[in-house]
Length: 350
Image 1 (cartoon, rainbow, N blue to C red):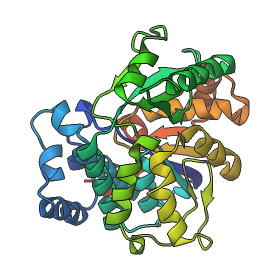
Image 2 (cartoon, rainbow, N blue to C red):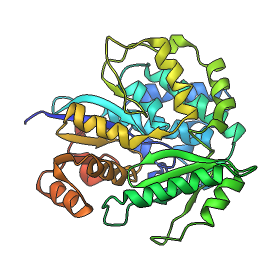
Image 3 (cartoon, helix red, strand yellow):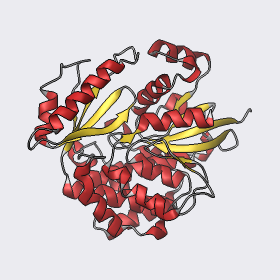
Image 4 (cartoon, one colour):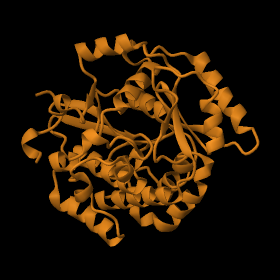
């Protein structure tokens, strides 16, 4: 079999939902490692991942809490990375969306699996305890995924206008392909949501149990994270690591203190540019495949939209992407059972 190069993409919050219940039980390949994760949670007085993942039914209030969701998503992501068929897949770089950065750190070897879990679990718990502000999502591309830059500029101008109002906080949280993820306080979010037209039957869409991630409102959480997470957790990555600015942290050339400063500083309080991360992944590494780990299947659209914005392989619309994907698949979502087998050793997965 021909070995294919791949960039691995780790998803963020909001990706472990009802359909993902039992994901760790179905796919996590290392029971001893999962037990070590749960030992960390038990010591902190938290419910175990085994109990959460093995619940009879999904409960939004329980499973989507930051202190629970972060651990579940990190473990599911890392388990999928460990399940890759490395004889058939040559991972050339790793990136992630939002809290997926913590998972990407571990997948790239910049932190150990246990240290990555400590970072994800700590930050998720701190954000849940503070729960400062919230997030809403709105598209600037149409459903055909053709870029509409004038519309994007107008929406960002509206955000700036609202942010300038007294007692209103609003900012771009994540540049997510054809979506703008906005974050702020209740006044800022409501002002935006009441100023735009409802589109596609679901936008603007408020995200439950989400704080104002990647904005200045999270400065107190970032400070708490720096106090709790020492530099010793971080090391040189084994694989190139693409961050939320589109910058690359290279093996052998990464300063550990700088990586920690970014992770517990800029990454928490400034816009996360996922679109730029995917552009760098495509243009710098030119992989055969973009592999989105589980849990969930919702990040694939943003990856495809980001590739369209980068004009990767000449794609300029949803139709172009679908044709390219049909002719020679370039995007594999491990959360989809029909695609998972393309990049895993089935016999190695329990």
